[in-house]
Image 1 (tube, each protein chain N blue to C red):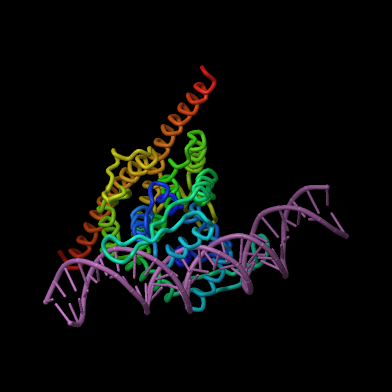
Image 2: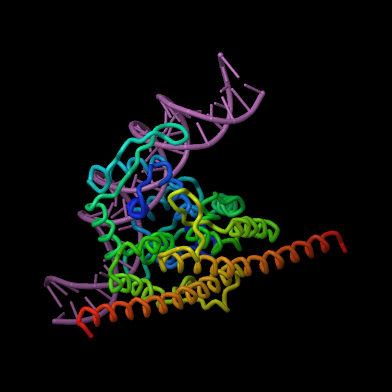
Length: 184
Length: 184
DNA sequence: GTTCTTTACCTCGGAGTCGATATATCTTGT
DNA sequence: ACAAGATATATCGACTCCGAGGTAAAGAAC
């Protein structure tokens, strides 16, 4: 998703792509050559991107990669109907968010944000005692577990706040677009 | 790490372990049977845990798992000197934090928190233009990317705040312990 | 009485990722 | 002239993890 997402902005070669993906998801976990290049080939075989050899501006020749219509469609499908992990796994969610603007319909964007919003509403119960009963933060003996739950709660509220504002904006824009189309 | 960490609290059987790991890391990504049971076997082979068959309280018989001294040592090694990913990947970091109290020396605990603190100090530069120059949040056209960076910044500050307080506490405790040992 | 669901454990194949390794090009320093 | 280092692409074996499937036991539903 990150490869197609970046290429949708403008054409890039593999090495550049590697650095950009590493900066985005990768300040978390850099992407390995052995992952990147086979994935590019896979996307090429699936006609999601085309390759043009160009002289390297600094050194060895580059393969400039460009996204195709097929690739754009694939990207939009991934964004419009993301797998569960992209909603629940923070790392994956942030990658999705970085490319959500490529899904051009505000209503569709709002729907994706709403899925995340709904997930964040379930406050995660992280720790249980021997009997399987949940332990509230104030009963936790470990200060690290206490902090973990505090941070988790605080960051969730921050994101929920942003999500609500954003969903509101998008729905207003979608509603306005409908009014215009209706001639209202 | 999560398996040994939970067993260090009290003995558990596989199924229970599965649910606890799923609640902790897994509200993010539940753990599959095909991952859990081979891993338990691997830890058993490495003498990190022992197994006792007990009648199931509800249905099929359980294998009660108990951590050994070898397992405790292994857990502490992982906690004391975590691989880079455990510092930089939020998911992994939260798992580590959930078991850091098993590392009993406050000075060692503080050192681990300091590694995370240092990582959070580098503000991640996420997006770049065609020329490779970093794009500041206010220049981003996508509201999602803007929000992404805002949330990222805000949650980092929350965690840094907690880390600083915690590291201070731990160092005071470590210092106090030294004074006591010195008879001061 | 038979099926369904939940609990509980286990294995195998496939997909994905990494780390090591190899190759080639161009610039810079010595 | 030569080596070193950054740029740039690619492959291969090893490892991890998941998902699908299978086994089994107990209680609940019909």
